Length: 222
Ligand SMILES: Cc1cc2nc3c(=O)[nH]c(=O)nc-3n(C[C@H](O)[C@H](O)[C@H](O)COP(=O)(O)OP(=O)(O)OC[C@H]3O[C@@H](n4cnc5c(N)ncnc54)[C@H](O)[C@@H]3O)c2cc1C
Image (cartoon, rainbow, N blue to C red; front, side, top):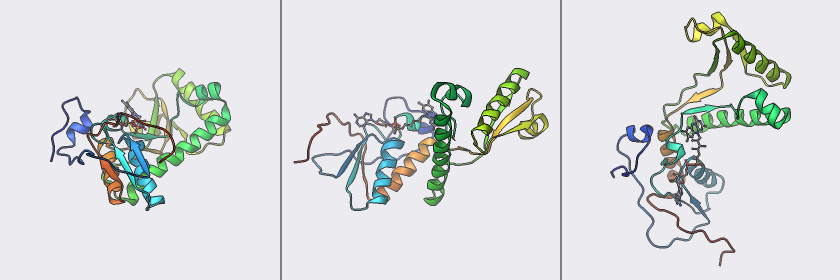
């Protein structure tokens, strides 16, 4: 077991206890795919490539430890929200964009849940759903406006809860109603990224930690 780095870690990373780092890269290696950075993007790319094409040699090179960047510091929500909400995004990017982006995010949330279940990734995953509580009459109006737009766009899975139904979920007299979307997962991001590292290793990818990439040269392989 190795100690955590001296630079500050997120609470998620710091709380997770002893962690088995992969050794740094020493010397030269030749691989089909070298991935810079061991966050969700890099580690998921590694295990997905190995799943799709097991014969590829794949190496992840991580400057500190896996999850050291945003992936080990995030808020823990797997949710469909894109940007600033449906109405604002429709104004900025158009209605088709909102529809397509929401469909993409639905696939992302469901796909992550599938990945976690299929591979038994131990990351404290739960699916509590998403409540956007209205605390004033103007907020109620704003949420109704959002729901009207969602329904006009043919997006399902989001509904208005009247006051009593909202209070059944979270009991506060401040709540006048809520927007309810069951499709929201909560997880421990540090555990998830480390479990995805385990999956990448099991599938045969190489992961090197404490391995800063100092230069990338683009061009044909010689
Ligand atoms: C405070 C916060 C809260 C968030 N909350 C949420 C949320 O609730 N839900 C959600 O879906 N998203 C959330 N996000 C966004 C999400 O965490 C990021 O989109 C995601 O983690 C990005 O992953 P990544 O792998 O692309 O980047 P990172 O996780 O940042 O990974 C990049 C890695 O590259 C390494 N690296 C950098 N330079 C080099 C180099 N030269 N050589 C080798 N390695 C290098 C870094 O050390 C790092 O580990 C949040 C982000 C933040 C910051």
